[in-house]
Length: 119
Image 1: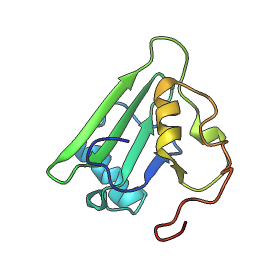
Image 2: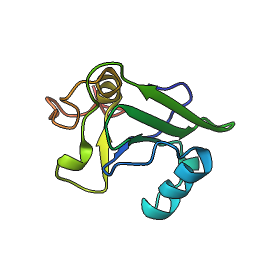
Image 3: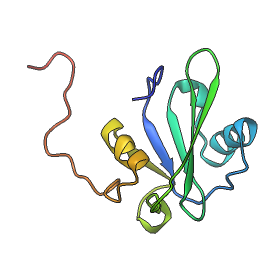
């Protein structure tokens, strides 16, 4: 997980202009996705050619933007997968996504998620 990230991880399902930065991505999260960046959720955006991605999150002290460009291969194409505007992924799936793995968003839970107070 990203340092300081305390919320859920969402992948935006539409291609985003990779020239967008702090304010433009914040505006996209607030207006189009109707989410609050200050809640601590992590938002992942991919470019149309799927060579680049950006991650936006509030770490509690400031707004952070991470950028990654793959040398070989492509990131997943979340717009080719059925579902809501945002694809909710786990920290493990985020790690796979950052490595360029194509299985992100297809993984099904193999067990119930751990809940505090349960054995």
